[in-house]
Image (cartoon, rainbow, N blue to C red; front, side, top):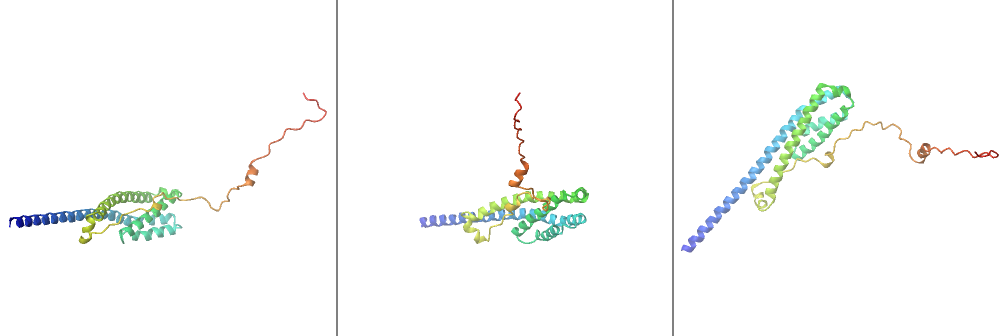
Length: 221
Protein backbone atom coordinates (compact mmCIF):
# COMPACT_ATOMS: atom_id res chain seq x y z
CA UNK A 1 0.00 0.00 0.00
CA UNK A 2 2.85 2.35 0.83
CA UNK A 3 4.52 1.64 -2.54
CA UNK A 4 1.37 2.52 -4.46
CA UNK A 5 1.05 5.73 -2.46
CA UNK A 6 4.61 6.71 -3.28
CA UNK A 7 4.04 5.97 -6.97
CA UNK A 8 0.82 8.03 -6.91
CA UNK A 9 2.60 10.96 -5.27
CA UNK A 10 5.42 10.77 -7.81
CA UNK A 11 2.95 10.72 -10.71
CA UNK A 12 1.04 13.69 -9.32
CA UNK A 13 4.27 15.60 -8.75
CA UNK A 14 5.38 14.84 -12.33
CA UNK A 15 2.05 16.05 -13.70
CA UNK A 16 2.28 19.25 -11.66
CA UNK A 17 5.82 19.90 -12.90
CA UNK A 18 4.78 19.21 -16.50
CA UNK A 19 1.77 21.53 -16.25
CA UNK A 20 3.90 24.27 -14.67
CA UNK A 21 6.47 23.87 -17.43
CA UNK A 22 3.81 24.12 -20.15
CA UNK A 23 2.31 27.19 -18.49
CA UNK A 24 5.74 28.86 -18.36
CA UNK A 25 6.28 28.04 -22.03
CA UNK A 26 2.87 29.44 -22.94
CA UNK A 27 3.55 32.64 -21.01
CA UNK A 28 6.91 32.94 -22.75
CA UNK A 29 5.20 32.71 -26.14
CA UNK A 30 2.70 35.38 -25.08
CA UNK A 31 5.46 37.71 -23.85
CA UNK A 32 7.43 37.39 -27.08
CA UNK A 33 4.35 37.86 -29.24
CA UNK A 34 3.37 40.98 -27.30
CA UNK A 35 6.84 42.42 -27.85
CA UNK A 36 6.47 41.83 -31.58
CA UNK A 37 3.04 43.47 -31.63
CA UNK A 38 4.28 46.46 -29.61
CA UNK A 39 7.26 46.94 -31.93
CA UNK A 40 4.96 46.72 -34.95
CA UNK A 41 2.71 49.38 -33.42
CA UNK A 42 5.77 51.67 -33.27
CA UNK A 43 6.40 51.09 -36.98
CA UNK A 44 2.74 51.66 -37.79
CA UNK A 45 2.80 55.03 -36.02
CA UNK A 46 5.70 56.20 -38.18
CA UNK A 47 4.12 54.85 -41.37
CA UNK A 48 0.95 56.80 -40.62
CA UNK A 49 3.04 59.88 -39.85
CA UNK A 50 4.66 59.58 -43.26
CA UNK A 51 1.20 59.07 -44.78
CA UNK A 52 0.09 62.43 -43.36
CA UNK A 53 3.25 64.27 -44.50
CA UNK A 54 3.34 63.22 -48.16
CA UNK A 55 0.43 65.34 -49.52
CA UNK A 56 2.13 68.59 -48.44
CA UNK A 57 5.37 67.56 -50.16
CA UNK A 58 3.54 66.60 -53.37
CA UNK A 59 1.70 69.94 -53.45
CA UNK A 60 4.94 71.84 -52.94
CA UNK A 61 6.77 69.96 -55.70
CA UNK A 62 3.87 70.30 -58.14
CA UNK A 63 4.27 74.07 -58.07
CA UNK A 64 7.86 73.82 -59.30
CA UNK A 65 7.92 70.64 -61.36
CA UNK A 66 4.49 69.84 -62.73
CA UNK A 67 6.14 67.85 -65.53
CA UNK A 68 7.27 65.13 -63.08
CA UNK A 69 3.79 63.67 -63.01
CA UNK A 70 4.83 60.02 -63.16
CA UNK A 71 6.92 60.15 -59.99
CA UNK A 72 4.33 62.19 -58.10
CA UNK A 73 1.57 59.82 -59.19
CA UNK A 74 3.63 56.87 -57.98
CA UNK A 75 4.23 58.54 -54.61
CA UNK A 76 0.52 59.24 -54.21
CA UNK A 77 -0.41 55.65 -55.08
CA UNK A 78 2.16 54.12 -52.74
CA UNK A 79 1.07 56.43 -49.94
CA UNK A 80 -2.24 54.61 -49.53
CA UNK A 81 -0.52 51.21 -49.42
CA UNK A 82 1.72 51.89 -46.42
CA UNK A 83 -1.25 51.90 -44.04
CA UNK A 84 -3.07 48.83 -45.37
CA UNK A 85 -2.36 45.17 -45.97
CA UNK A 86 -0.04 42.68 -44.29
CA UNK A 87 3.41 43.32 -42.87
CA UNK A 88 4.97 42.26 -46.16
CA UNK A 89 2.63 44.52 -48.15
CA UNK A 90 3.42 47.51 -45.96
CA UNK A 91 7.15 46.78 -46.03
CA UNK A 92 7.19 46.57 -49.83
CA UNK A 93 5.14 49.76 -50.21
CA UNK A 94 7.35 51.57 -47.70
CA UNK A 95 10.55 50.54 -49.50
CA UNK A 96 9.21 51.60 -52.90
CA UNK A 97 7.98 54.87 -51.43
CA UNK A 98 11.40 55.56 -49.92
CA UNK A 99 13.01 55.16 -53.33
CA UNK A 100 10.44 57.44 -54.98
CA UNK A 101 10.98 60.15 -52.35
CA UNK A 102 14.76 59.86 -52.70
CA UNK A 103 14.31 60.39 -56.43
CA UNK A 104 12.32 63.59 -55.81
CA UNK A 105 14.92 64.89 -53.37
CA UNK A 106 17.77 64.03 -55.73
CA UNK A 107 16.14 65.73 -58.71
CA UNK A 108 15.49 68.82 -56.54
CA UNK A 109 19.26 69.37 -56.48
CA UNK A 110 18.95 70.40 -60.13
CA UNK A 111 16.30 73.04 -59.36
CA UNK A 112 17.75 75.83 -57.18
CA UNK A 113 14.38 77.53 -56.62
CA UNK A 114 12.80 74.33 -55.36
CA UNK A 115 15.83 73.41 -53.28
CA UNK A 116 15.79 76.87 -51.66
CA UNK A 117 12.09 76.71 -50.85
CA UNK A 118 11.52 76.80 -47.09
CA UNK A 119 8.45 74.57 -47.42
CA UNK A 120 10.32 71.98 -49.43
CA UNK A 121 13.25 71.98 -46.99
CA UNK A 122 10.89 71.51 -44.07
CA UNK A 123 9.05 68.63 -45.73
CA UNK A 124 12.31 67.00 -46.74
CA UNK A 125 13.75 67.23 -43.22
CA UNK A 126 10.58 65.89 -41.60
CA UNK A 127 10.26 62.98 -44.02
CA UNK A 128 13.93 62.07 -43.68
CA UNK A 129 13.55 62.15 -39.89
CA UNK A 130 10.54 59.86 -40.20
CA UNK A 131 12.54 57.51 -42.42
CA UNK A 132 15.27 57.32 -39.77
CA UNK A 133 12.71 56.51 -37.09
CA UNK A 134 11.18 53.78 -39.26
CA UNK A 135 14.63 52.25 -39.75
CA UNK A 136 15.29 52.37 -36.00
CA UNK A 137 12.04 50.74 -34.91
CA UNK A 138 12.29 48.25 -37.79
CA UNK A 139 15.52 46.93 -36.26
CA UNK A 140 13.84 46.38 -32.89
CA UNK A 141 10.83 44.78 -34.53
CA UNK A 142 12.95 42.34 -36.52
CA UNK A 143 14.94 41.41 -33.40
CA UNK A 144 11.73 40.60 -31.52
CA UNK A 145 10.38 38.64 -34.49
CA UNK A 146 13.59 36.59 -34.62
CA UNK A 147 13.37 35.79 -30.91
CA UNK A 148 9.68 34.87 -31.17
CA UNK A 149 10.11 32.72 -34.29
CA UNK A 150 13.03 30.86 -32.71
CA UNK A 151 10.94 30.13 -29.62
CA UNK A 152 8.04 28.60 -31.54
CA UNK A 153 10.12 26.79 -34.17
CA UNK A 154 12.73 25.16 -31.95
CA UNK A 155 12.09 22.09 -29.83
CA UNK A 156 10.13 21.82 -27.59
CA UNK A 157 8.32 25.01 -28.57
CA UNK A 158 7.61 23.64 -32.03
CA UNK A 159 5.51 20.89 -30.44
CA UNK A 160 3.33 23.12 -28.28
CA UNK A 161 3.16 26.39 -30.26
CA UNK A 162 0.65 25.07 -32.88
CA UNK A 163 -1.52 23.74 -30.06
CA UNK A 164 -1.77 27.25 -28.59
CA UNK A 165 -2.22 28.92 -32.00
CA UNK A 166 1.15 30.66 -32.10
CA UNK A 167 2.38 31.16 -35.66
CA UNK A 168 5.45 32.55 -37.36
CA UNK A 169 5.66 36.34 -37.83
CA UNK A 170 7.04 38.11 -40.90
CA UNK A 171 10.09 40.36 -40.86
CA UNK A 172 9.92 43.98 -41.99
CA UNK A 173 12.61 43.67 -44.64
CA UNK A 174 14.35 45.82 -47.22
CA UNK A 175 15.00 44.11 -50.58
CA UNK A 176 18.64 43.92 -51.64
CA UNK A 177 18.09 46.00 -54.78
CA UNK A 178 16.64 48.83 -52.69
CA UNK A 179 19.50 49.03 -50.20
CA UNK A 180 21.72 50.81 -52.71
CA UNK A 181 21.55 54.62 -52.95
CA UNK A 182 19.27 55.97 -55.65
CA UNK A 183 20.96 57.10 -58.86
CA UNK A 184 19.55 60.01 -60.88
CA UNK A 185 21.13 60.75 -64.27
CA UNK A 186 20.86 64.29 -65.64
CA UNK A 187 23.15 63.65 -68.61
CA UNK A 188 21.90 64.48 -72.10
CA UNK A 189 21.41 61.15 -73.79
CA UNK A 190 20.93 62.88 -77.16
CA UNK A 191 24.51 64.21 -77.21
CA UNK A 192 26.66 62.40 -79.77
CA UNK A 193 29.05 59.89 -78.32
CA UNK A 194 32.76 60.52 -78.79
CA UNK A 195 34.35 58.67 -81.67
CA UNK A 196 36.15 55.49 -80.74
CA UNK A 197 38.26 52.93 -82.47
CA UNK A 198 40.87 53.26 -85.14
CA UNK A 199 39.56 56.56 -86.48
CA UNK A 200 39.98 58.26 -83.12
CA UNK A 201 43.43 56.85 -82.65
CA UNK A 202 44.50 58.08 -86.05
CA UNK A 203 43.14 61.57 -85.35
CA UNK A 204 44.94 61.84 -82.04
CA UNK A 205 48.33 60.53 -83.20
CA UNK A 206 49.98 62.85 -85.66
CA UNK A 207 53.00 61.63 -87.67
CA UNK A 208 56.26 62.96 -86.31
CA UNK A 209 58.16 65.26 -88.70
CA UNK A 210 61.13 63.51 -90.29
CA UNK A 211 64.53 65.26 -90.38
CA UNK A 212 65.37 66.72 -93.78
CA UNK A 213 67.74 64.65 -95.89
CA UNK A 214 71.18 66.24 -96.46
CA UNK A 215 71.41 67.94 -99.82
CA UNK A 216 73.99 66.63 -102.26
CA UNK A 217 77.00 68.81 -102.91
CA UNK A 218 76.95 70.61 -99.54
CA UNK A 219 79.79 69.57 -97.29
CA UNK A 220 78.97 68.71 -93.78
CA UNK A 221 80.17 71.00 -91.01
